[in-house]
Image 1 (cartoon, rainbow, N blue to C red):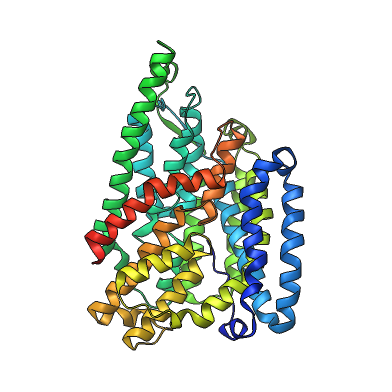
Image 2 (spheres, helix red, strand yellow):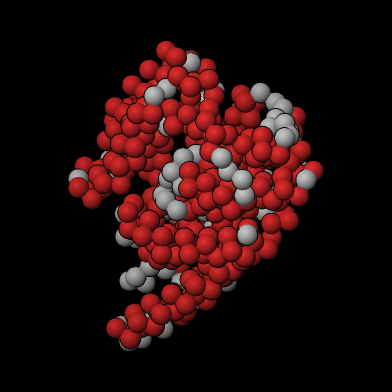
Length: 437
């Protein structure tokens, strides 16, 4: 997700109860689909909820610190533009071929996505691969687990290796962390994504065999029905994906104004839209509903979390964290529910204070073994634990929305957290034991 940080001074002015609208927003996202599902589906109703909860918070905080609200609005715009660009551009790329929805081929797609996530970002990789995976599993009766693991791996865990992988790492690059430094985290990346791929293959194989027994011969027809040579239509859109990454890297390296970055991303959207045949988007099942849903909900999330982030920024250094595993779990827990980019910055600043370096230059943390260990733990917590909830990282909700629009019955907010508690938390305990103690 993008940055939506507020000035620390605001955090000293706000009472703790000011985070209540944010808590209500999260509760509404979790409960309303279960209680009033028919009325929840229209994006207009989601926008109304965001306005009712977010507008009062934005107006109130603007009376205390107008710059914080302006900053949050600018970051929301940048966030939606980036997601929108990757959504539109990837929607013009059609991957055709022998994608059969078998456990082996599903695992291969997830593995490719894990690698691509660190190259074109978790959002770019998710938007590129989600539709082919949906089509490949169209004949399957039980398939929600495929897309849950997709969120775990492609939309989150795969993005650990480069600043392009996830916004927190890009933020670290802008503040002095060398571009290639996160490549040193490849053992942790391999441990988490490898474990998830193995577990996914076991789970998907078990479900696949049970389906085949209940519908003898049906699933055997998958391979025959999908005998199409692999090809990619709309390949020119790959240039526009590279263009988006180039705009982000160039804007950060050259310290260009945000309006230049936003204009560059808009240009990539326009070029993709006008140069891609409409038939390709139709073949992809492209609709505006998923990105409109994300825009409506995250408008409320960005507005209501201004107080939460401000309080965290003001008092994060007072948490008394000392060891890497503490930074891993603290940054991860907050990244599960708050924007992981400002959470990363908050704990990186706390780590800088703990080792006596300047928080404006996070590269200074790397001068000592302890500083490097703390920063590594923060990187892992911010990236990996964004998978703990649907709102932990931007592509999570988009994957859910696209899968649901394609007929997949995705788990609700709490049921999804059941998956993450059962699968991810034990894995993160293992990460702690193997790498951080």
